[in-house]
Amino acid sequence: MKILVCGHNGQVAQALQGALAGLGEVCLVGRDQFDMARPEQLREPLRRQTPDLIINAAAHTAVDQAENEPELAFAINAEAPGIVAEEAARLGVPLIHYSTDYVFDGSKATPYDEDDAPNPLGIYGRSKLAGEQAIRAAGSEHLILRTSWVYSLHGRNFLLTMQRLLQERAQLKVVDDQIGAPTWAATIAASTRALIERWQSGQAGAWGTYHLTAQGETSWFGFAQAIGEQLKIRGLPCAELLPIPSSEYPTPAKRPLNSRLDCSRLAREWQVSQPHWHDALIDCLK
Image 1: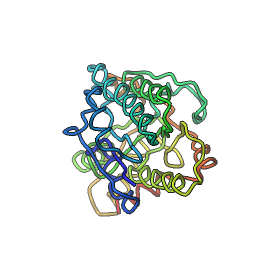
Image 2: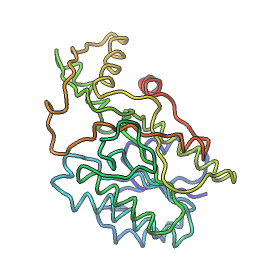
Image 3: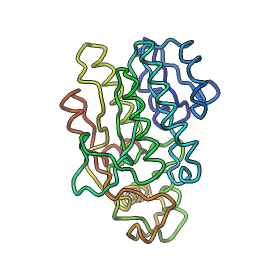
């Protein structure tokens, strides 16, 4: 089987490279071959690759930056996934695509399930929602996997930023009223492999949209506390952490206060579940 992974340098794409080993020929392609910012130029290289499965792990994920460059965000997050889905349908192969908790406004009091109406607060969320809609309209067999608060030891993310700041500063303020599930990129990659294996073995669930995050919940402050605890265990310096509301840390893009996603449908339909976020964090740091 030939698996084409779009998004060579991203956190999830890097994790997929190891997680998919042994399933077949895994081809990671980056901007030099597949420039998602130029959607119409994707068709020819996709047809030339003739994959058996396409995974789109490419995205414009700079949430605040997207507010200032909406055309680029929509090109990468909406138009490009739509064209990839159209080509997947033309080739008759499935597409796996990653989306986000930011398609919701965070006003719900309980975790969001897949049937809840999206209502994104900013450009990033709107562009990702438009990408979901374009994929569904293309008519290909697909899995849209919404995840949240992705981190790894690669690239730029909350874990690496906190590790640095907690060791550089004496005191650090972190938002405590946004709730979600920090999700290790390796968890997403391992779950993706499990989904592919079930599809290969004829045990696939229904195609469609699913939520895929770590189990449990915390705030950004709670996540920072857990990172700090691991620094202390290793004998490294750690700043004093102070919880603050989102109102004290204004950003160009408004964030949802509730980013919790109900992942029970994925477990029920595909028999794929994820570890608790704190356990995954410890495994990542090991």
